[in-house]
Image (cartoon, rainbow over all chains, first blue to last red):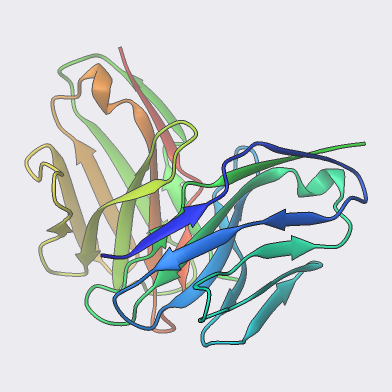
Length: 113
Length: 114
């Protein structure tokens, strides 16, 4: 089956630190990959996505590269801000069948001033 | 971007009663809606997929008689938790997908069964 594995949190960083949140996946086909962010009290928002190998998704200073050889999609940001504190979910989708997202367990990021 | 709303945002009910949660796509037509359940500090678990005008497809282990899903129009899906019990307390999230295949998520509904 399909699955997504994320590093466990919480991840606690100081403002302006470098962020990496690891994500690896297994899939029965060729998935598209996503990072979603959930701010406190809000719904999930799409942060970035990549649809094929070596694609780099980027948004708001975050980026992730689709690595087919390592089945990974690690999220990075060069300089985090307090406002980045949220829960980050890695997810995949296969455009066959019911086309439903499969989520990782989520990683909570806490950025301290 | 597209907006999906959920109502209510929070609900407390007594054990044995039923609760209905609404999910609406406000500015697009959603051919497919998904219902997820999120336990504390855990991921979203897909409960069911519903297509407008047809019966929902439930994931393995989800009781279809307990979690009734109706997708009567292209902008509205409802989840009814019947005969709720404390173990049904959770955060329920819907998402809606239009023609672009991108999913848009609602803000979630926190259900507490006492």
